[in-house]
Image 1 (cartoon, rainbow, N blue to C red):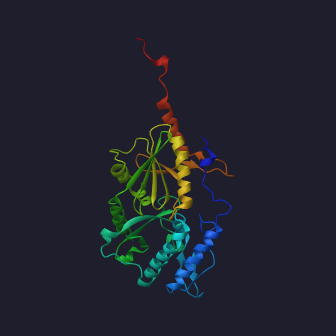
Image 2 (cartoon, rainbow, N blue to C red; image 1 turned 45 degrees about the vertical axis):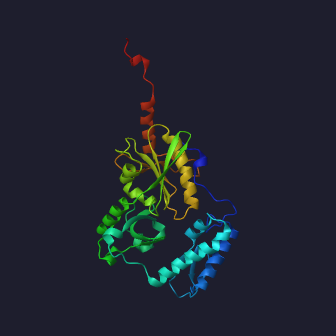
Image 3 (tube, rainbow, N blue to C red; image 1 turned 180 degrees about the vertical axis):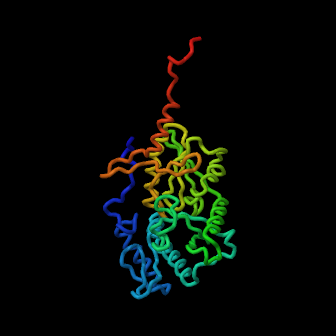
Length: 320
């Protein structure tokens, strides 16, 4: 079963900067100028050579590297007259962290929070042998201080084993409180989970989200559709009937838009989560940019749902 091409991943228009999306080329040039000016004012000697990052002016230095991708997605949500202050605040935070060094949690058992991070955003050598939660996404212990999130790639530096750091991180992730908004569209209901910089990471403890945020006493018998397009957003649809098919199209569209525009992009994909919390692809990608198809697992589920919705066969009804 194919899915309408309108729901395939969103693409930027021709004027979009190829690196600092979703900004136009003119806006990207202005952002780079503001970032360089703020860096210079704060005593940070950097230059821009593309690649969505400011790199050391001294070519022999390995650091600092100031990423601009998430900053571009952040300022895109505001009018340009607010950009100078936003960029200044961001660069100031980066400079302060570079000069003071990463914070060390005083109580890792209470402070660590597990976080989903794209594999390609982590050092290649470290990420090489780490197991993925989902394709391209790793789970990493971290801490949050206001708007600054620090990841700890070597828990041994905190005197912890990896399993202990992950256990602490997951336990604290369960303690977060979600903001839940429902979007109803043509009899479809999508739950938007937000409220913290770890909203998408709450997928790691989806059982808690369903129970405490969506107030479901038991796991849905047919599972849920789930998407984690960006760090601040988790999208969910509780599967009840064949409306799962248009719900999938809507989720693909929403996830693609969030992934293309919001800070901290994670994945534009939608997943089928079974009642026992196995994560499976909801779609199958075909070659040559053909429309997406339902994955075998989701197609099997829709066949089951179809049989449950069929009217009773009159031949099988007993005579009065």
